[in-house]
Image 1 (cartoon, rainbow, N blue to C red):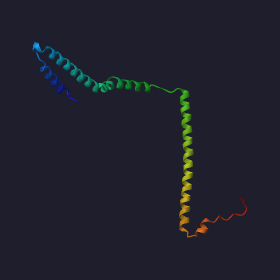
Image 2 (image 1 turned 135 degrees about the horizontal axis):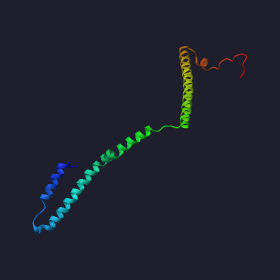
Image 3 (image 1 turned 90 degrees about the vertical axis):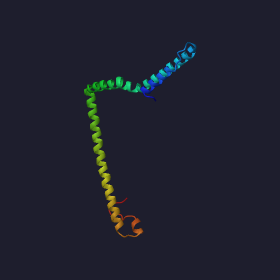
Image 4 (image 1 turned 90 degrees about the horizontal axis):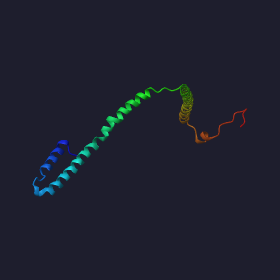
Amino acid sequence: MQTGANVEQTINRWIADVPEEHEKLEDAVDKCSAILIQTFKFIRSQIADQAGLFGESFFKLPMLRRLEEDMCKIELHGHHVQQHQKQQEQHEAELQETIAALDDVSACVQKLKQFAASFGSKKTSTTDAFSPPARRSGRQS
């Protein structure tokens, strides 16, 4: 893409090439038409490149500023505040339950690791390791 100065120099060069003699009038009209078309293309290209910036500067940013101001003025009504508080309390209760369950699972994992470590340190035969546990008296399954 050419810069503004280069475009101006190019258009001036094209204008200088337009014949001024009366005999070459048709050629001059054709060249002037071509110059107008190319000038229009350059202008359209420049505007198209800047359209996003113009839209952002003159429309989007002011609209977002006004929207932000309006949203700061929004207040929840009593019903919505109560509903939000209930949801927050429910989420906090669920969080506490989940934390307790996670603590239980962590404790079980720790016990299993200790058992595996103590089981690995004892030298037992495979038959002892896989034999069923002895039944306790007083309880029947």
